[in-house]
Length: 433
Image (cartoon, rainbow, N blue to C red; front, side, top):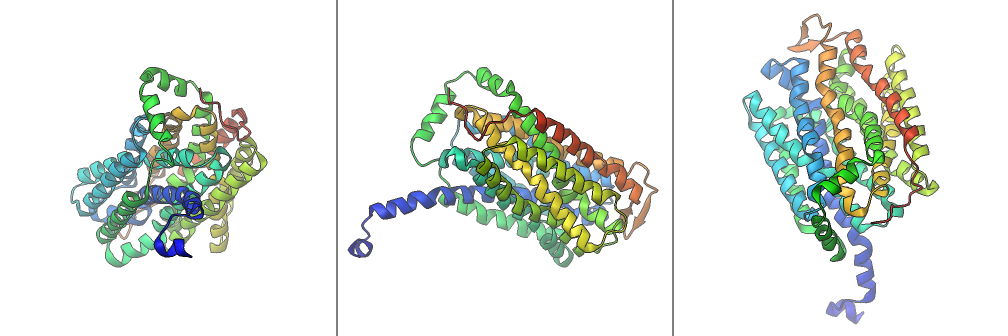
């Protein structure tokens, strides 16, 4: 009792801090990912407003949104290398600050080129969000818990994706897209404060040594070693392809498809698209835990790709789906595609610890490349468009959307093939050499 009153540090209190500090650190860092995932998916809420205010086509809106992915695609590999050499905490603070600032700029812009530039810089900041969280998780947790921890990090990010659906759609309808984006930026400021207060690089000084040792290695040798690892490419390809429903349906086109083809209201459509994220929220930690539990990575990836393919085919080729059916099917798509999170611990286990950031950066370049397909989706959906409008928004037919959505099952088939060629790690890390 006296130790509590006098503030004396006891072995028990030290143990409690050691137990909770990893979770607190990774949770606060994951809020960076949460914020960035809101930015990835925000166009589903504001695309109709942008189309109407600036007289934009679907393809042009797709290009504006995809500027985020262009920047991320360009900078992911350098981001991984920077994280292997520089304090993760400092990198997160700089990247998050730039994203918050550019979100504010986007909310106040009156010219499309400013929207594109701010979206691009936001993507530069976003290139650090997942890799930095994985780097921190690898520092704070043992390998046997890595899939579960990364699954929980992705789960938190999916809440950001969900927030960008119905809540942001309702705010846009009530306040307008500009005020909604200002609220969005304010959330980012709050998260930035939490990161400043609670995020640390690692539990010991050994993490600093890891950065120092890596900095002494030849740049070309470190990069070449990660680049030559086939596991990084296969895992990155798998995750990129299974991520397409989030990038294409959740982030931008799902709402328009559900309103114009399935006959839903904007609010109903936002509920349905949010089910992709809700499915991922449930699936990411559960599938990660199952993978850790059975000690295998490859088998769950194959099963998830197969069931994802079945789910999207039902959506595309079943006529007259009810609202309940759409809710369940979009949940299933989110749940089964969350098998993609297994790729991240698989990559960490397939590379030396000092090269985790670089290797995840290479894989993430492939992963984020899927987002650059947003303009292609917009181009395909507009390919046979009859130039009809409804309330200032382009009106598309079912055949227009079917042509564009055919990208998704094709991607799942390729992802399934990639999973068969992945080498099983049995959840055991590669010896650090």
